[in-house]
Length: 418
Ligand SMILES: Cc1cc2nc3c(=O)[nH]c(=O)nc-3n(C[C@H](O)[C@H](O)[C@H](O)COP(=O)(O)OP(=O)(O)OC[C@H]3O[C@@H](n4cnc5c(N)ncnc54)[C@H](O)[C@@H]3O)c2cc1C
Image (cartoon, rainbow, N blue to C red; front, side, top):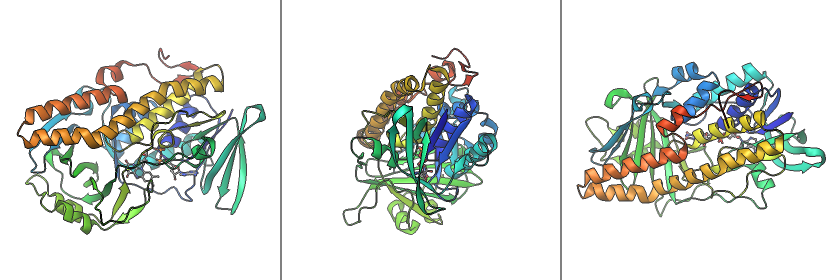
């Protein structure tokens, strides 16, 4: 079967590796970027994503590239602890949680694809423009080839749109283009070389309903930070879904000028970043349909979500594993696509909605409780919220540790799969 994947990001690359592991021999990725450079800043891979990458044989590479996260802590703007919980192996999972530079994770996946599927498996400078189903179960992908400066058509038996939040393939197949949504908040991201804090393995969320910052180490003495706040009335709106907008760190440091604690100087951290990026908080509404004939959606193209809960990359990774499993174990492609969508669409819709709640109501409630000195109520609320979130996103500790693998060996589930 010929399989074309639009987009060689985290989801597309994991899909290529998963399909290859499940026995598919003809898989090609079409990536818009002309070069596969290390882009982005840090992201978190909780144990459900780490399990999948480990089962693809990438456990050791991840351990070298990432930092084990052993604690998640919430603190108020004065720096006072509201609540903390163990994470990864310390929480009883069989797999660690990693904080990692997105670029390093991306490179690790690129190298694995090139080694396993061959040096030509990723075709760069190939921007997917649109797709259309053809007779006989074939699908046509129209691609803008930046190398030859022309438009060309690729035919396949299956097309997977893994081309990110602004998916061109999705928008050409859906009845109408999918609008991007924003709650008016902006996410500012950067990395700074700085001394470790709170033991060197904590991910801390500091703030309240007005603004908050997430800080965690990603290795090589680098701290990753992510400041989230509403866009000021006087600030011009920026483009939704563009990960490459730069902003001066000095402007952002002013927002956290009072956030200086003896265990971490947040103002200095933000000011010390060589460069920072702004990304308006953007997602899409849960979609009613992912599969259109012989094409389906995966990752952000299917379910872009607000970055609360460390699940954007994780859900893309799980999509990839489930889709490859479906193709490896269902009787035909159409049934595989139907099964994949049934497995993944309702779950990811819940995660999208939960992330919207986390961004708004949950933080407001906790901050109010913490301000009233009802810290144990705030802690209880956070504990319940995190516990519910783990269940719906697929990383409740017991479920994850005991559920069957999504690996496929010679057309069969590796261990008691569905
Ligand atoms: C440049 C960049 C930087 C990012 N930085 C961060 C970050 O710092 N922190 C974070 O949490 N998340 C970041 N993300 C998003 C994060 O990678 C995704 O939310 C998540 O990993 C889901 O993965 P995905 O494969 O669905 O999408 P993505 O990882 O976004 O991958 C989509 C891929 O498709 C390619 N593409 C886009 N349009 C087309 C097209 N028309 N034809 C062919 N290819 C196309 C893109 O270049 C990209 O390689 C970034 C994404 C990008 C593209």
